[in-house]
Length: 172
Image (cartoon, rainbow, N blue to C red; front, side):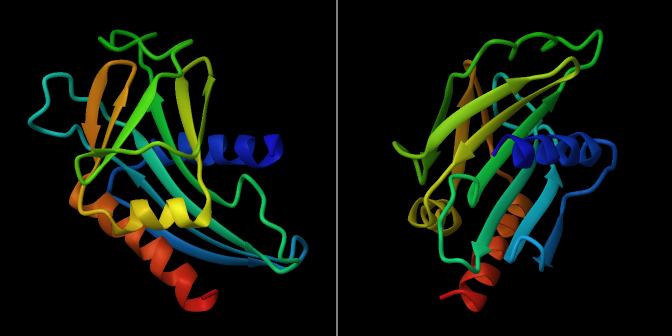
């Protein structure tokens, strides 16, 4: 699990170095005998919030051919890149307080975790397949991280729906 989380951390940091909304990837790993689906994006600062925050995002699903589910199979990753001079510099260090609203209703489920790095903070949400489906089928997804509110934009909503629909199409 740590190896996968570290590889995603590197991907998140790399994702923050390009502009754009997102990219879908489907990859079969013959060595791990798995089928991976992910969308990598960089969130622009959402409007309409008193404390807008910007997070790079990854939506990830993996099918294991051995049939064994792992905690790292269905995930949402949010990464905030701190920069010197940023008003939010150090705002997220040692803060694991993350809450989610799906269609305006509090989501209670999944397993949250966070990792502080020198220049970034990564928040992990490990989900079951059914919980991931709830996110993918929602009309709106909002989050509060360390007291600051954010919302998935239309491109991120399309991204999470694409990951789920491609996964389900190949692994019903």
